[in-house]
Image (cartoon, rainbow, N blue to C red; front, side, top):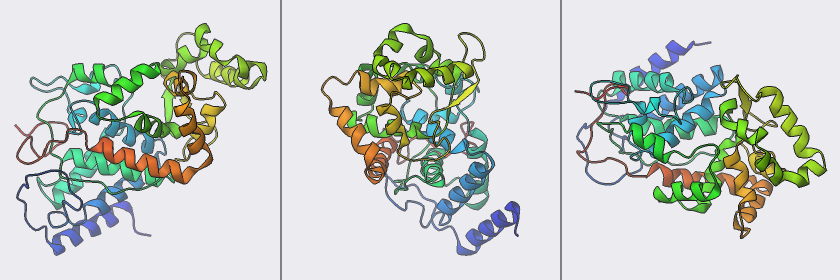
Length: 337
């Protein structure tokens, strides 16, 4: 069988033989097939790279999706989250929601390296993030969708923005709705995109309050009565003690932790969402509209997939840099100057 380097070499040779077309910048909004002439095998390179990374580490699928989310919620989908500390830039990687939490930077670096070899200074890091998120979801059995392209990369990062605009794992429903509204996303998008917690893992630091806070536990008297929530809480206590072991991990979904499916919503109906920000969708939904959406997704996976894909497209269109603004970084970690 052909090894990874051999396959990548064939892809690069095919690109060179095909030709890369025009490299001029186009003004205007995001479009489909933006790189069709400029870098025709872009999506194949990204998809293959993501599949290799996820094969080595299944958790990487959720990490790549999360990278795109944390990027878009700070200054828009502009790859600012990828910038390292350098010069006058304070990296968003050091912000509270990201520190010792965000992963997958080396996967994006590898994809960028291959694309720079094939199509120099052509594909933005922001577009790589959007494509990698889509392919990561699809690689674990989730939906695929058309990714609108043409983003350019930011010349700056926002450490303060990362601390301010990314929802915390203990957020109330009101706070979650407010954060999403600031990004032009509605309650329906919030519920659909929360379904991303159907795979991946979370650190003990992110869900300790959910396990030991007396006020929070009181919201689940019904589940305590039937020993359902109580047994689940005991499992979480074995993973996450009252203090220490902050970086120990728990699956967000114990039933199918590495698969993208609709089981997240089944968990919510049983009071078994891992994070407080998951469970408030049920406990703080006073008019019952969110409950209806959760029930629909729990019983109809195709409906969830369609809604999730639609909301991902909306999220990917948050304040992109286009035209002659920003730049196409040569390295995703540093601005070109």
